[in-house]
Image 1 (cartoon, helix red, strand yellow):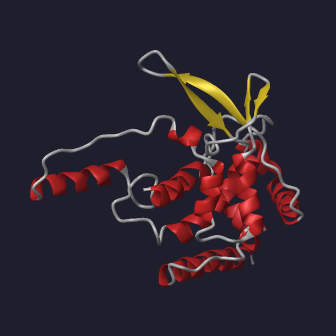
Image 2 (image 1 turned 90 degrees about the vertical axis):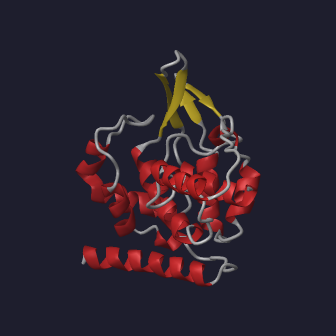
Image 3 (image 1 turned 180 degrees about the vertical axis):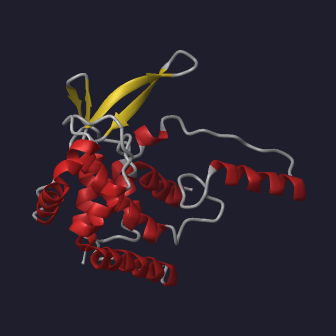
Length: 235
């Protein structure tokens, strides 16, 4: 029974991807209903074990002990629009140059919902992303980008290569502009509201709460795809 329902959800996402590919102007009005117990259960199975917990202290190992009850409660809150992501726990890890890099740790429950939204967004926007985009893309990597760069340099009259980095990009993405980008393809108010809540969920550092009025969710799997959508339209 469970396998059948999971396959139904995956099939629905595949149909959405096909529709997005066939009609570049299609805007999707109903997506939040895909956040079913079976789909979220599947997303949970993809979470990495042994990672540090978020601000609630709940680990993946603890969450799975009463998984069915947890997922049922999560879906109920999602349907009632009562679900609110918890602030991301921010810690710092040392860098080789002596500086420290901030690391965001979302709560397990928030990781599950982010994973689900990520899959939905990728099904739609992967059809739009240009072929020369490699960052955080499905079945692509930095090594693929380097291979393509090498092919171009060796076969085309290239005079120079520009290497650029956007300073603190993930921390400074404008929320309003990002939402405008998402609305090019998504007009489901429930899903957009949910994404907005993740953007505004805030950060907890050493017991102090900080609001987030810009940037994508730190440490979450949703952040890279949101950033890629933003860059797709910005560039």
